[in-house]
Image (cartoon, rainbow, N blue to C red; front, side, top):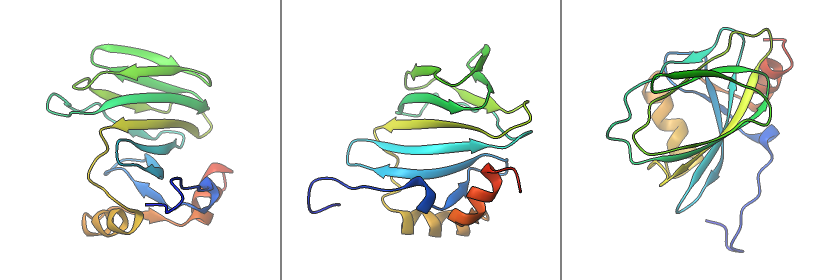
Length: 147
């Protein structure tokens, strides 16, 4: 926790974490006591399938930064474009798929935060689970279309 009551981070300095066995990458930017925020990057063809959140306590805030995504909330599927904002109640299943030719990005905030705690704990957990971790440079290459 920051001693000044705040923390500042540049997204260009943050590792990318592979969500699961999918092509969906997250860069955590806020580890708060009452919220957690990451920037998600979904390259062309990438996805995060909808999965049951019936037991999840997370209230979510979604904001599309750039690109287009097919978003599925429960049985509702629609296209999110830059500027699309969503409030998602706890227990609602969320999935995304990128059917476009460019990388799509959005910001996702959780309340309450998952028990991740810190970048170091998150990195260790992801590596132990067999998920990839990309350096900030690799994330920038992916976003620029080179990888």
